[in-house]
Length: 174
Image: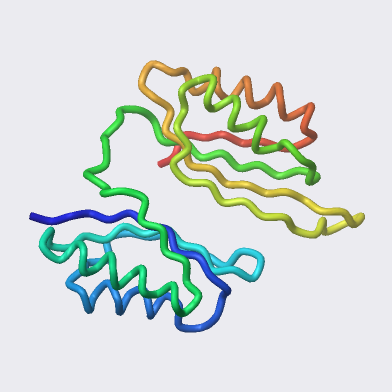
């Protein structure tokens, strides 16, 4: 029987961090299934899911926790199971506007009000090409449940876009 582990890893960014995690997983019988990793403000941050024979789970967990001696914090959140399949429409939101506090709070509030699940979110601040200032950009992949009208979600996003002074584009993916 296979055990699934979902974890986060974080530490000061430097070459070789991913290799250390990957080698630890492989050396202890684990199989790397999926991950998202990036450099944020001088830190390396990642989330990953691995599987391992149930009999080697504790061995792998101990080895991963041993990475902390090298400055890499590892948090094993839970046993991850099979993903729950939810019916609905996958959509992508693209947002850009003058940076200010509360943009994602407002956007995620609209999603939550409609029961829309955020599947993936990437955001960044960039210098405005003309006139100075800082722009906030986000790309969000969401799952709109069956029975929820995508046009209604879009309309509510457009209502807050004016107040936030951002451009928002929400489209069905694929």
